Image 1 (spheres, rainbow, N blue to C red):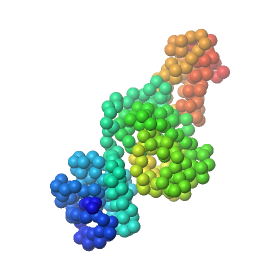
Image 2 (image 1 turned 135 degrees about the horizontal axis):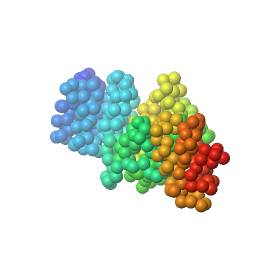
Image 3 (image 1 turned 45 degrees about the vertical axis):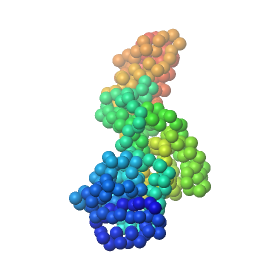
Image 4 (image 1 turned 180 degrees about the horizontal axis):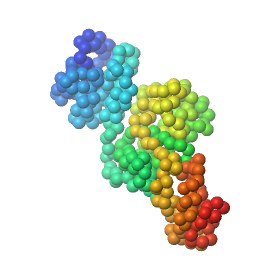
Amino acid sequence: MSSVLIVDDQKELHDILKVVVQPLGCEAEFAFDGQEALDLFKNNSFDVVLSDISMTPMDGISLLNEIKDIDPNAIVILMTGYGSMETAVSALKSGAFDYIQKPLKIKEFVAALKKGLDAKSRGMVSRPIAQTSQRTIPPFQASENCYALIGKNKQIVKAQQQVDRLIKVSTPVLLQGPVGTGKKMVVLTIHHSSSCNEGELVAIDCSIADQETLREQLVGSDGLGGALLQRANGGSLYLQSVESMDQELQSSFAKLLKAIGHEFRLICSSEADLEEKMDKNEFSHDLFYRIALSVIQLPGLEGRMDDLEDIVRTIMDNSSNFKFDSRKIELSDEAFSFLRDQTWSKNLEQLVQKITNAVANTEDRIITPEVLQA
């Protein structure tokens, strides 16, 4: 018989849920607050813990953290009565297996409990998003070809720090920024620098994929996951231009992510501000809070002019010239002034193309504005 610990400060709810869980073959223990629940957890074995968040003296998030310290693989489902997605995100970040909203709907409660029991029976790890990989991962350093993360710009430094943390954990990542800011470079860096590199990086551009095909590949005809998810197991799934999903698919994919356990890192990118689209009901709230547990914002090139010389030098070092060692080619001061005066509608992508072409075509060791304009 499965054992369940239910934590809530309302006795009436205890009485209701006792009746609900018995037909499922569950033996239930009840606690009125986090401290009482923690004492029970220390002295008993439970397959699933379901806890309210709003309690005193110990709230549900604190209880979750204490339980995870004792058993990192514990299945903990939190219940929130505030309708607060921020609270739900905090719960998932702390390692909650799932969350459900109060007032409870019995059908949703039973579904969440069954999913937790199934995960426990299959030995599925309920990994805290902040849990590090078993293997040691060195601190992040921007690779020679990841121009998106080179420099000392305030936003870039923040992005570097985020990537440094993310390569050690399995948190879903959302990359946002204008076209050409190097989101794909960051995706490759996160995948290849983390434990996910042992699996495949599966990528699809949602802006050009047929929506029905995309639905089949992601959600599957049975709603339990399509071929892309299966391929990504053990690796990373990258959804480019995720804002291009139609709203029906957004809803279906969010439900799928909530309903199933998955063993891949989910990375999404968008040129749009998804919070703004969400506020306008143009993007699913449920999907946003499933994919945006960590958001990296990449600035346009015009906001990175202080880093221009470092970026250009790195691009040149990775370019080639028929006559010179590219590492010995320089840009004149006038050439840098020319670059700073340009409009960069395609940002980093446009700069890489311009510098690569200039290095390839220059017949002199010093690149002038005339070479850049050719």
